[in-house]
Each structure stands twice: as structure tokens, then as C-alpha cells.
Image (cartoon, rainbow, N blue to C red; front, side, top):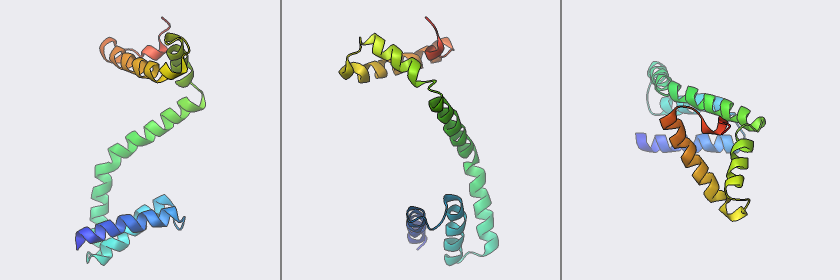
Length: 126
């Protein structure tokens, strides 16, 4: 029974957001609260479960928020795309089909370069 209510919670949550009946934050609060009460829990039990869940996912939420803000800023100011794309195209002599291979190679190189030498290779001038 609880599994069915869990799946229904997800379905109702997604439908309310897709149909634009509720905002995401409002749906994240109201839908689990309603389904928790329908499952037979009292309001105190539901609030304890909600706070325990928030404590568990808060670090991941903070990390996600940082990633969205950081990469959003980088994309707005073309900080990552212009340097890496230019070097990738230069390394494969502008051939459009090998751009994917150049991007993969540049990403692989910069990952290893960052990991073992300790500074971002996209920012190096050599």
C-alpha cells in the first residue's frame, strides 16, 4: 500500500507541475504532506519525516545550487566555451566531424591535467 502511495505521489507531483497547477516548491511541500496524511500518519509524524528528509538531501541541494549558479555564470559570459572550443578546433584543424573527438580528447586531457598537476588546463596559456 505504501509503495502504491509513493508512486501516486510522484505521478501527482509531476502532473501538477507539468499542467502548471502548482509551482515546484509548493508541490514539493503540499503533495507529500497530503499523501502522508492519506497513508495514515499524523501531522507530527509527517513533519518529522519531512525534516529528516531535508537534512539528508540538503548537502546535495547545496551542491546542485552551486553547480547551476557556477555553470550558468560561466555560460552567460562564455568563459568555458570559447577557450575550450577554440583549442579543440585548433587541435583538429577545423574539421567539423572530428570536433567531437577533439572535445572528448580535450576533456580527457584537462581531467587528467587537473587531477595530477593541480591546476585547470583550460586556463593555462601554454
